Length: 189
Image 1 (cartoon, one colour):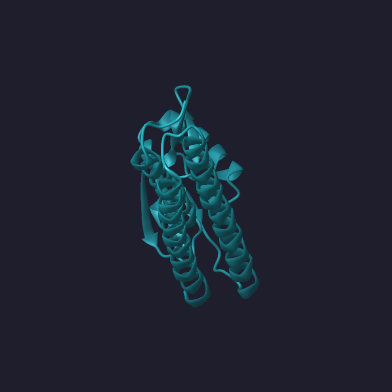
Image 2: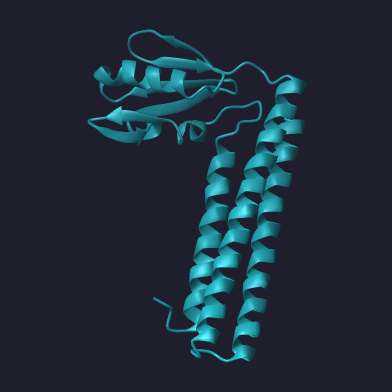
């Protein structure tokens, strides 16, 4: 089923590219640079009555020190589940459980670990760029089909492809900016 208009194609392309950049932003927030924040646990899910739920949605999470998170589950029965999820997340934290709260301590980053994190960030960025380019390709393929079916003229197709390319360039630039900022944060913290 082909879209009704060039605008519809462009809107779809724009939305998919926006969500790719947003996913990258979320993934990057989970990569910490020396200091830990409660947002680090957003991607760690715990089984909460059969539903995978982010730890901050079942616990109070605070950062009393730059290297430590204190996780206090709202239900005491969740303590073991939260601890298991944290261990499975491989965040490199040492955990201690006193029966009421979990203290998750992050060792300071060595130069080597910082470089590993930068490598990880660059890989995530490359994956995001590939996703953006795939969206561009899909959008352009749709435009070609619309032109072939005589729903739009060749000129409209070319103009729309230029717009799609501009959106691609903008989103790749956003990805680069996110990565540069994260790299600075990792190397200078």
